[in-house]
Image (cartoon, rainbow over all chains, first blue to last red; front, top):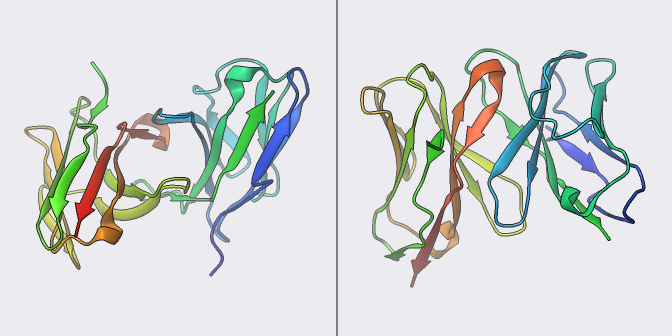
Amino acid sequence: GAGVSQSPSNKVTEKGKDVELRCDPISGHTALYWYRQSLGQGLEFLIYFQGNSAPDKSGLPSDRFSAERTGGSVSTLTIQRTQQEDSAVYLCASSRGALFDEQYFGPGTRLTVT
Amino acid sequence: QKEVEQNSGPLSVPEGAIASLNCTYSDRGSQSFFWYRQYSGKSPELIMSIYSNGDKEDGRFTAQLNKASQYVSLLIRDSQPSDSATYLCAVKGGGDKLIFGTGTRLQVFP
């Protein structure tokens, strides 16, 4: 079946602009996660959705970052007033949502802020 | 103290050898452990999950978990050049998020 998809695959934006990143999880997966991976750094958790609710937003680095999920499916991560330090690969993962379930990653969106 | 620690490597092994990758974690209450493989420029790909103490084998891969020592490892038998990648250890933290180590770079040379 289809895996997690993300769009766009690459995004170059100017400092101060807003960007929207999209994630389409595996069909039937109720849990959706956003992570960020900066050059040479590990993966950093941003936010987690169970259905349309976000019980854990603890990883969002500032109030410029927000995310929503609609219909228990597609999620959008929005970064307002982008800064150069926001440059990273943004990865989305989904899982069935059970306690022990594995998370499967999409291909990521590479964001470059100039 | 980092929550999930891995040696960054590189770990260099000859083709056909066993590669041993190690990971320690700090949260004694952790229940779920995962190994991901990440090729350069690609996203992480799940290799193994392990939840109980002991060994779990899948093809050339064996995951080992020792909760008392807070230690999880991945063995790759008959290593191939195509196994050359960064291997990420992940532990499921509170709220279902994964906490990742910084990864061990594996190089398998012919």
